[in-house]
Image 1 (cartoon, one colour):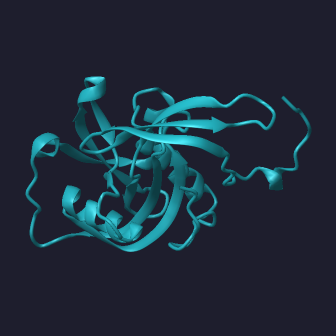
Image 2 (tube, helix red, strand yellow):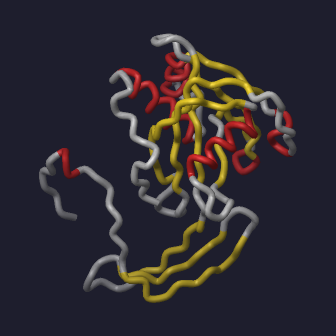
Length: 213
């Protein structure tokens, strides 16, 4: 490991592919698959085997309403079987429609999950859910000036009994820091929204901002 002082302007994630000696798609499920690569990570060192979930990616939405300084964020409680828990989350969905624009996907998910539309959209935060073992990347949008759609969307499976509530943004931040919330999109989205508000929304990026995915 090399250690040196780095200028803050250099703290930027970058695409940096390595030589893949072989690639195998081991298994395909309904949502994601399992891939295995033999990859040379460091020049002059032996190649290594890496298995990871091949995931299409997803979008999340922080829906915000309320007067400045008293904003509320929309949260949904949904059962998640892999962890056997009901989690408070923000609206989100897979990028599983080929060729669909990312913003259109976010608008669709907000409408389908919450019966809401928004007049103002901004890019809030991007992240990899588990970069050591999955290719899944999520972009979270901030949706403001929300209003209800005239026709509710029918829901099924885990979404059929979701509980939905508006929470004061400051109280949501308290819930994150107290360890009461565990969904990564909710945690990242709530904290990023609070940080953006503290800077009068200046850090928000345009809808065509680059996405490392």
